[in-house]
Length: 481
Image (tube, rainbow, N blue to C red):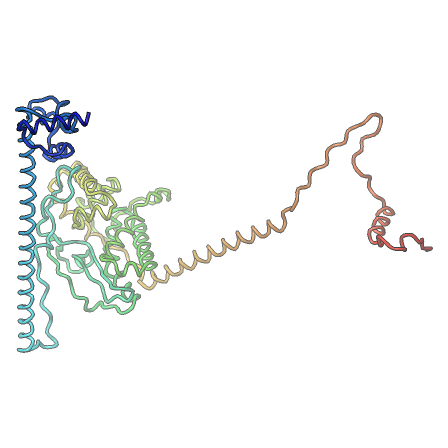
């Protein structure tokens, strides 16, 4: 068959047939277009079986249809060459532009360095002068107050939320001996102390002066004093229980102190603590507690009816909706950050957020506007007065006591298991002693139930025989006693 195809190809070439690529390249060219067998056969005017035989080399295209087939493959090859040339030119232009940008950056950097050196030589500022505040960039503004309408395909927020600063509290420490804490936005503590609305403020990175820590203990104490009140407020909005919210925050700081080398170098220690506190506060195991532990009202404050209604509506939402709504609309996190903290995908987080807003709007129609809902949530977060927290040294000592207790309990349990195993090995029988089978009557003989009980004389004789020498003349010569 192959020989016939070769001969037919040779005859076609002698007859002036157009030049064609090798059979193994014909299909590759058609698929790179891309074109199906049906499309290529329709373009040439042959059947699919004929085109398949041309591509496999069983037959050779001849005549007018062969010329059409050759022109089709030649056009595809020309398009591929042109596309490759365009890609190569684009690659060269991109490399040239990147080189030009790099050279421009180097020139600007050298110029700024020379300007700084000139300024330093002209005169240095006084020692008591305060550094200028960090400029506020447009990148620190938040996203828009809407999320994508299609929650199944949304990956990021549609627009940027105008004039909203991050409401989370942050603290960054470098190494086990951290140098201080750093906020990534407006904390609830700062807003409660100043009485200003921090949700519409762009916050630069504050200096670490006044809270510098030189030891791990001081760094932990500064982080606790800065973030604990805000975390208690947020946990109270999630659970409605003051005792549980305070316990969850203390538990989070216990974990942080136990893993302090890891938390100290984390990019967002406040976010790490917030995630730990939320997980403990919203654990389903708390449902097994006494049913008398119901959500308690705000004490020592005059709670307005709209705030009470919003708080009760939040507590009526599912746990995942409640947490997502608080993080996104209450604290001002971005959608990817909220998804990462709730350990869910971005589309799932967007769907939860939309469903939570819809549920809140059904209960409170005046909160249909997202901007109003965000403002009310921010006010509700700041309105809660946190209970007095335990001092930071008590938290650290409590964590260490807890670690010692569980370590000693584990050691005691291990010793108990080892002792019980040793006692069992010492007292367990080392061989199997089968029980005596019951006696059976044989003829007129009585049933033998084993050896008869020995009398005192028999026992004395048995002991004497056991202790007497087994061999020697003493066993043959009787002794007169």
